[in-house]
Amino acid sequence: MNELRKSERRKIIIDTDPGQDDAAAIMMAFGSPDELDILGLTVVAGNVPLAMTERNARLLAELCGRPDIAIYAGADAPLKRPLVTAEHVHGKTGLDGPDWPEPQMQLAPGHAVDFIVETLKREAPGTVTLCTLGPLTNIALAFQKAPEIVPLIREIVMMGGGFFEGGNITPTAEFNVFVDPEAADIVFRAGAPIVMMPLDVTHKVLTHKARVEKLRALGTKPAQAMVAMLQFFERFDAEKYGSDGAPLHDPTVIAYLLRPDLFKGRRCNVEVEVTSPLTVGMTVVDWWQVTDRKHNALVMRDIDDDGFFALLTERIGRLQ
Image (cartoon, rainbow, N blue to C red; front, side):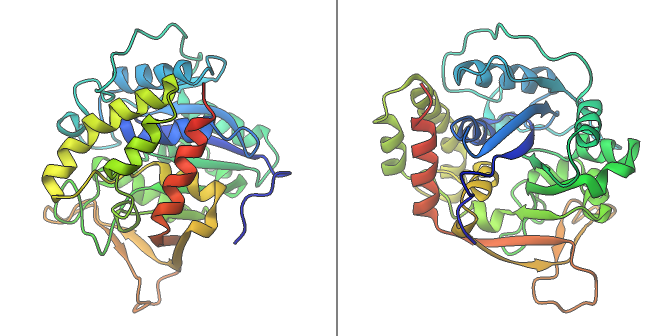
């Protein structure tokens, strides 16, 4: 797999619940205008409630000098369950760390689900990639509302799930899938091409102090904000895992679009557990091909972590 060709500017929608690691992914995307055409950001409740995630998305767009970007508020709760949030990880605002001003830009009119449906119908078939960084509620709602959009999707590149690494919110479930397992189940069963970035990959990209210092050395306002976010964010995982730094989950999605050669994985069947009280939200990955269930995702397992952080630093360094 080769680096994304300069002549190919991939059209993407980023579906997000910012979150410091979402912030890193969004900033990485904003720092890659030659390769990525961001059609809009859609926001979902997840790491924090919707009122905070939509605020955070606007803050990040302003920080990166992109108040022109369309940001749409979406689902404020999972399909069938009460919302579970992660303030214990991300802080009360979801972007704790920097001293943020209040955002000045406004949300785009309309609902995120309608924007997803209308955009996929408007753009040429097979040209729009959905980059999902949070619970899959908005995507599942779009599929339920307009199932005809599924074959129009180029690809869904998602951060979510885990297998060999287990879970990070329960022993078996990763947070994004656990928050809305019914939505994840709908998406995995829909038939769209999926690239899955599970904890098995993201736990290999740790915010070591030396890596954070390289970001700090950039000296720009966006980089300084990122450093402040990471210093807050990593305190939880460093204590939890006893590691130097924290896993930086969501930017793996954007890195894959830019440098798929950094990743290794295989096509598998992935099923989502939606009923068991013990394992609800588990992504059951048939890594060893022991069933005859149809492959429905390219599941990543390995990453060049140094190459990933070099790319992240370089792209954030482009923001002023």
